[in-house]
Image 1 (tube, helix red, strand yellow):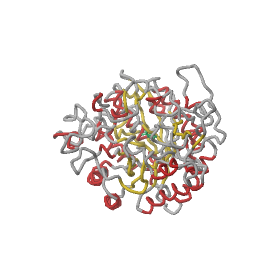
Image 2 (cartoon, protein in one colour):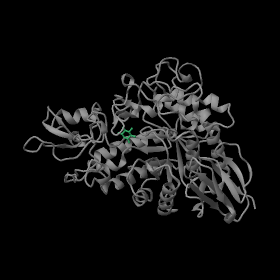
Image 3 (tube, protein in one colour):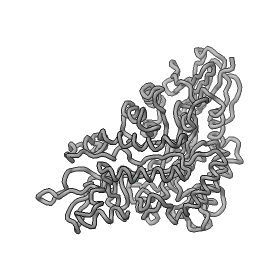
Image 4 (cartoon, helix red, strand yellow):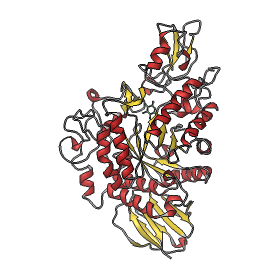
Length: 527
Ligand code: BGC
């Protein structure tokens, strides 16, 4: 598409670097491993690769607790390895997106060590320190987000200086004070550092937390056990200043025309709030609505209708079905995962693919003694380890990920579910991803065309058109475990099936089309 930025038409793939490919035999993935596998990603056809944090870290939250923003953790390699990664990515026309964690650092970051050393240290105000209430209680009722301690206070007591510091996530992740301009400058310098080294932008972690209420007012409480703290928070998050901080970050990006900002702005936001983040602030605000929607045609259609119309053409929509914090979409079933892939890769907006979802990697039941993630997902008692297990490359030992036992166990069915097997099977989920990505590349309508839902389909089906100029694509998806007949006579044009979820169907679309359980088709107008 002419005049579009790569991320407006492209597909972005997320890598959790600990689990992608281990080249130095320590059971943990590394940057060289990613570099070696870029050919695979180019073959798959993605345009951008977002890599979760690989900066120096204590690994208490596996990279989301940064100790040095401008260096590579030795577990992952060196800055030279990063340079080689960029070189190879450039040669394949792949963009590399980094993961910026601006809300908090590790408690072992030199800034925090200084800050906590005394009340009059020049870096004291780089973090958020408050006195205890007269009875010794924390300054307010704000909670931390590490759901293992869901009812826990966001304030941590510091014995040495006898004040509380704010840690909105785990206690080991003290919040930076974004109201201090020196903090803003320091993080903006980090942004420039990596852009100058060849990064093409940032996924920005927990961006809605940056500014806090200057009066530190209490949040409303509720006796309802289902009360959602984040969704109802008025003071702890989402303060108007945050958008100004992001605009200042964007100024730096102006010097780097290919670079983009993708913000993690919360799962609970309305379409209007997502629009407010994506128009004139971020380039893309993650839309997690698919992850949280029931896997049903009516619910998904109404979400898409509302979101697409609200974002409109001023902002860039996005769709996510998996990431390093959420159970993998295969939880719905293999056929359903195919349908989900077709949906995400054909809607209007930037699609995100989480590593391993393209081959249908399973959520691994990690035994208690091998757990790594300190963060227990409250409702299920599980951790996020289940979706972070090593990439399954082939059926050899340790799934071809490493030469030694990896940091997390390999999925039980790796000898069948792996990249090599999927590349040798023309009907695999991986080949479906590739076919959909290829079709997208060839189709202006899929890359950037309008979205228009089709009415009159059975209630378990969701059908929509994507149109650009005289190109028209029709997508029909059956979200039920039953066969469905869809009357397409109203479509009023001839369409040819280009891709079906089982990759076993081609040819002209009939006016009454029967879809198999959880089958989807993408058809292109031929006349
Ligand atoms: C990341 C998590 C991380 C948390 C704290 C989230 O947005 O996706 O993996 O634990 O932020 O940095």
